[in-house]
Length: 124
Length: 497
Image (cartoon, rainbow over all chains, first blue to last red):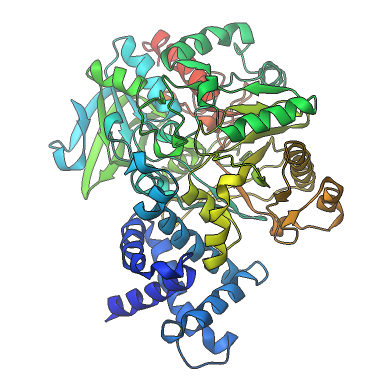
């Protein structure tokens, strides 16, 4: 159950950060890539990211006064929440959003679809 | 024995005359020099052994296989600094840009005068530099591999009358793929993995890959071996002489968690980080910076001020990780990256930080940028902006949360006038050094003039942690030369150690 919940929040996060919303078919592959990457991170970082995901799930309660969790919100609302966190003064919320952003965006731009588009066909 | 991985380990206890912990610029080179002299040597490496022909073809795969913490490393302080280092056989030489500069003569002279370090005169060091440069094939980056962005950078610097130099890099037949940080899928970069490690294996050296050194076992003033763990297995390696080359974070950490205390109190202190900042020029012209060498030129005009300017061609995924844009805006931004020139500045820092152990011996790096270095950071960004506008940029994107971009040279003074705080600055580094400082005086340093740890008879350090101060240039060649020097000292004195 915990796994399913974490996956749901992560996929919602990936959806919010997707630079190409029309290519939502890439999101599952991006998720799989990130999970593999996370397995290499130190235990403490994985715990911090897990806690961060849970925090993100309930964050709408604080930012939008909404009882709807992050992963159940519409794409536009999720984007607004992430942008709100990124615009905060340096601190936990901003750093957390930046960490999520770096992870997800790196994964998107490592995807063979983009690599080919950018002229990296030699690498595939 | 070749490469021993946890899954192929049969022994629980082994013995070697010389044991090196770490296999990067310091450890790999030291191993190459020792085994050339017929020594019975083993290397222990925490990361995996990836054969040169199996190096990754994407940055994501490289993060997984070659980087510490999957590429997510951090230096705590104001501002926080992103930090990347290798964790594989070959160490950071596998994932760096391959720039090879000799230690500046004025730095060697400073170390000699201030720290009383013997035998580091340029004339003495020259022989080591020459031998290493030959082995790793250091040569000027050939023009056919320069990216269009690199050429624009060079021309702009020349037009301003600034001293610009062509990079000297360890490569053979560079294809200009701009994938140095993935280990060079073309196999052109002559990293330690490709050179000294292969020499080491050809001469029947042993590498324990995938084993982390947990603790050094001391008996009085002598180290008698190390405990290491890997893949759920434990291994005791006994050795006559121990050489630490785990980098400026892990080397002091290992000594500290082994209960060693330096008489000078300098172990883990004196951390220098060469803070880096980036500026991105947006051009009308299509530059495709990643189609060409990662870096082909550096501006050395401001080296006396401790400022080095250079281009930094990196794959799109690394760009996407580091820019402010997000979501659809990032998609639009990335559509234009072919028109962007990514440049950076390296600051030869004057402030220092510390390495401390937490959670049972994991190193944590703490560093606060001082006011003078922050001023020079802004000066470096103003110089980069001048250069990029000279080259034809219509906008320069800056690494400040409170001043994201400027659109003309007349806005450059805003960098100083806008009241930008350190906390609002995005910084990164790939060079850390100084945490086990070399000095001729045991009250000032952790190691003596030859890299031997004061207070021990047979423990040496061969990595950037021995540098008394930053060098203001890419440090790989300096690390290698000092390691070769220590290796020769050990060979010459092995019967007395």
